[in-house]
Length: 162
Image 1 (cartoon, rainbow, N blue to C red):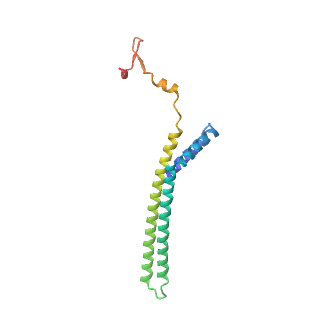
Image 2 (cartoon, one colour):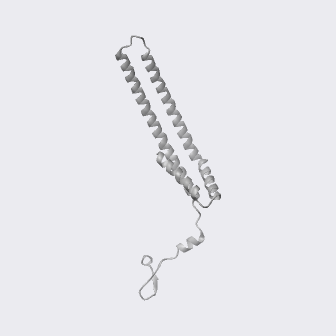
Image 3 (cartoon, rainbow, N blue to C red):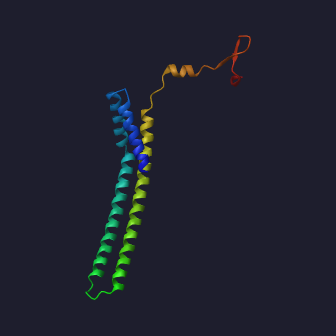
């Protein structure tokens, strides 16, 4: 996921820096990107990702806080703590950390996939808005059928036209 994002950013940066079109083309690209960014669909995706991440981070902080409280409580329960008490507290802390790490990984993966979809949609919109309009000369030359010549020098329509 990070590789895709970095590739697209690098590609865009390389194009802008390497193009000979200069500032005018840069401004066109910037305006197209702003137009895509300000579309309701992209902003809805951004809000969805922000809300999802905030929910998951809120869940994670509560889980971590509970684990730390449990660990401190078990460690300071009394001076007569046995080896078994300490090892069970360590085991419980390890399980809480593992659960928290798994939840964080899941939340990040979900947020990354949602962000990837939003980026793909934005790239599609930007690509469609940045395509140049076809000219009349290009369409008129495309309408002519191909012509082949036989051995005697006379022309005839291509086999695909008959």
